[in-house]
Image 1: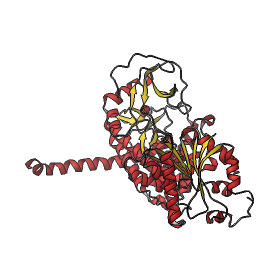
Image 2 (image 1 turned 90 degrees about the horizontal axis):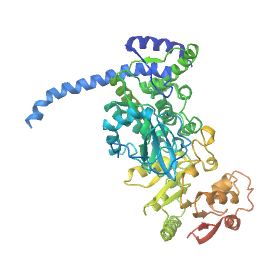
Image 3 (image 1 turned 135 degrees about the vertical axis):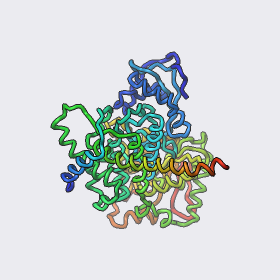
Length: 71
Length: 475
């Protein structure tokens, strides 16, 4: 893999930035350490997007409640 | 559906676990007196009860996403049982390597939908194997009732790697490199290794954020940590904490990445077959009429039909009109994809399109060769439809008539088969660039070979052609 080494460092760095804590793993299939590390990063980014989307929806619903209840 | 208290156990005992049902300690599937049961072990009790009490089971079954079951009074097959379930039957068991691109894609979407809904009920999918999905006719349905477990706050999705290997990697390879790479699923039963997928995908796919993360970086991380975990294997396994929003984000991201993978069925040998092989309209029409009228006159009416060399399923469709279930098999990924798209657009279709190389479909795969049974052990049919196929096997693949007949006699007791003589344009095409080593290829040799296994009930020339249609019954 032509990018393995720099990627490894990038993972370590990203993980230190985004993953707050660690949990003991409970799974009957081998989830794979590498998969868990990548997931930590993906979850931090994609999870933030979900939170923004939910907050945005909440804000919008605050403003649209008036006309909705008037109907 | 589920009763609150398990009924008192009655009836026969025994029953071997199904050959593919040994990985998950939560339970297993077993066969007894021709009926399929699922034994739930005491170890899984908490999760099973939550599946029911959280309303997740009802919600998934109600929307046709998960196979339903009854709690059964049957005796468990072995000690340690909490419950015995009797799942609703699936007509034909099929495997991911027999699905077209669209079928694998829809199975992936189903798995993600089930995961999303599980998260909404405080549960999570503990595995994401493509073998947890089956096709009931043309609709994907999740079959592993024991795949759900209570979600513990902060736990990452243990099945994330498995999902990427079973679904995302093969779909990406099929869409971005070559449709035939779907065949990797038949040699890699636990999914395509991500480092392999990463090497095969074009470099420009690094620019796609979804593929870059879920396949390229994922594959690299797997390799890197696989090496490092060997050196300190005694440490307890720990993983980064993942919030519930994070888990939903992963489902969003995987869905988005898979949605962007498109493949248009064209350019393979058979995708354009219907358009380019318009041999005399009139004889086509006569063949349709013959097949339909012979089929309608069969007594008893066949309920389960297998159409071999089905192409995009034109004749499967003709037969399915009467309500028979038709397993529509072809070896061309584009033909199967077209068939699937057409069938899934129809309401209440009874067609199941499957991809299989008929010259290599006779053996099982997986542990000890019987974990995943051969296709024709899973497909039980009353009738085989075999139109414009024999010349491909006999001349295209040098398979003697006798061996074709012997094989077809095992597939189903009745047969509607077309014979195409050597001077037909389609056969000449096969012989165009090779020496004709088939001096005996002809109707007489065909009838002689099939006569050892079948009795001919009807025989008729298809109008406007030299082709002959036979209706046969197994001796």
